[in-house]
Length: 484
Image (tube, rainbow, N blue to C red; front, side, top):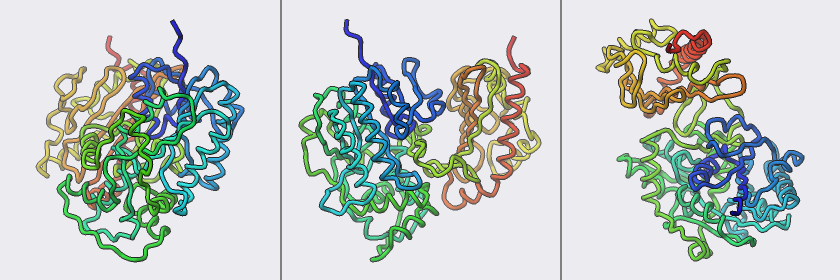
């Protein structure tokens, strides 16, 4: 029997890469992930997936990662980086191509961007297409998929649209909102990437897009229709990319530097002109209505599996005051190392709430419950059904158990009165010498009042979140909650 060769996946911490990783694992492929920060993939990969450190800007780190690799997925770009991102993209692609050639890689699959060269492409789109040229210059066959706007829960474009439509009843729109594009659902992008594994090892460029040619205006109106929102769009003749990017930075999860690069790209039409992908692949892309419907449905059912902001290149800094924006959600995430196993680390989490309280500032928790009761909410009176065990669906004070994996994960959805939706999640990952406790508080604000609420109480929340995590870690180390 032939031994299946290894697939190398770069960009696994990013939006598309994270989704592709799950698909490759589900199909039984042998996957190796290249990551600058391997610890960021802890708990995200399957037991058969290998994670190796490496950086395409440090060519000496690539030899070991590419050894024995048959196909490599190249999903790296530097749009969120500071400095000359085009030069970084060129250097990274050139280094990777040379190292892949030396390692005997059969082919590279690269996800780039649509855009007609005769249309004075933006720096971002120009760089995406130049990256494909740099990879092909290595002499290795490259299958380049060029996509337009990618729509899915957690994608940059979808979160931009979602934030604008949800927060602004009236929008001042520049002309670029009416430029034509061919948005494609993330599920279809992943299907194209996965099917590329079976294509012959020869360089090809495929343009991929959804079933509908639309504009950002059409996408926003369709999102508003599905959410039952009435929105007014007022168009103005002049609004520079700089002013537009600053506005996006104030009203959406896109900070100004990424916003400007994004807007400069949106001004270019990104429509499929070559239908070869439809005859070469078995994928039949969905239309705009279904793509948005699926994105909204996934968003409402669960945490986003991957987000554009998960990528190392998406942010100028890992933390900001008031929590990190992920999509329209605001996130406070903290970690603590404990020198004990997963079961011991999870034990105090499993027993949190009810008569034991929340391990820190219990008087404030009770006060919050009283205020919730006065506002017509459930308050803290429900407690918990069992002192030691939890099940999905259990009430836990003013929370509800939404996800539960013994000795690994607990996610609680808030049922108290708040101007938005809120979650609190604990997750344990095994590391050398013990375990890491990940504590994440997520708030999805409902309009302006939701933002006022989050930022108004954040100093208090930050203290409580930090104190609660420290108390959980202390109990785990002392073993107070470990069952006999």
